[in-house]
Image 1 (tube, rainbow, N blue to C red):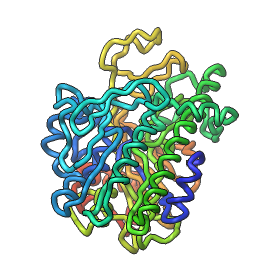
Image 2 (cartoon, helix red, strand yellow):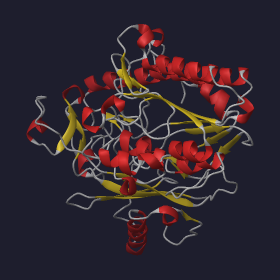
Image 3 (cartoon, helix red, strand yellow):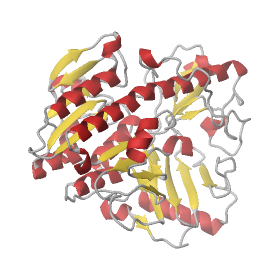
Image 4 (cartoon, rainbow, N blue to C red):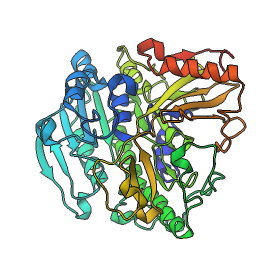
Length: 461
């Protein structure tokens, strides 16, 4: 959030900053599905970024799209709704309706076709494809900005209430900043945290244990460059937030409008000698920002834990609606200060034989192996895990079990080990580990109110 000074000032300092907000799953499409539906991955069944993995699949469209927060706001409260930007990674694919498909609940639709891009992309403008090139004015964040301004300039405050979702790919790969922002952070480097570029840690799961660790010296400047470019992509997002804020103020809508800012996943750059990505159960990947301002929300720093599955209930709560979900509204007073949330991830293998020149080319189980980054592989089919993440006044813990041949356990006490250097999964007392397993097993199959674990005292930690 450091580059986004205006966003921090206009939303964070005018409202609430949630410092303990976690993803339901640390990858784009599945977590976006959780945001839209209020469901954990095991309930919405979008398990990765492919159509076969549920991403914008026919099953998703038929089962879950009619039950997003947009559909409820439109159908039950007659909201005017607007969406611009990235939706689900496979949106617009010809095999699942193409650009003609407009998800239920949206009056104005400008969905990005496919995955994150900044130039040379297509948008579905209310069901019709519009192609954009590589000119500065085609920069996607700016196009989203222009579409938002058009919508808000034409909005009549005397009309129905509105919902507007602006979904920029930034700072996702390929990390392309707007021309005006190139080299704005040319002296910035990736944070050298205690867990940055470590020697092999034998207490981590097998994918992280794979070498080389530490990374070769020639890789580190590449990580620094990616870090800088990610920051630079956020400058256009910060301008977008500023422009939306200003037009809401000009139209006398600001005092009656909630503004929510968040992300769909975290990101690691060099932690535990894993070059880049977001598919690990560590804090870098699962912890994301959440800021909200609006009527009745005082300037505050909220330490109570929340999850992306809570956004659905919270948005409906603003409109005075309630529907079943796996989360709960974070707008309610007296949020539980002792809560456990679930993080799930299902690993992916390579979809075709690779020819990168890396040793991994002969192992289809491995995925996202980059010869420019020491041939480290970021994912694998059995990089599959479930975690419970608990925060309370006395506890700050995570407990994970991997679905690999080791059924490997990783657990950390973040009150003592903020950078997750010491896996206590095999050194904790047997009875305590049993209670962790029992709670994780329940959460991994929960649905609706069964997923809300609060006020637990010391029953399992």
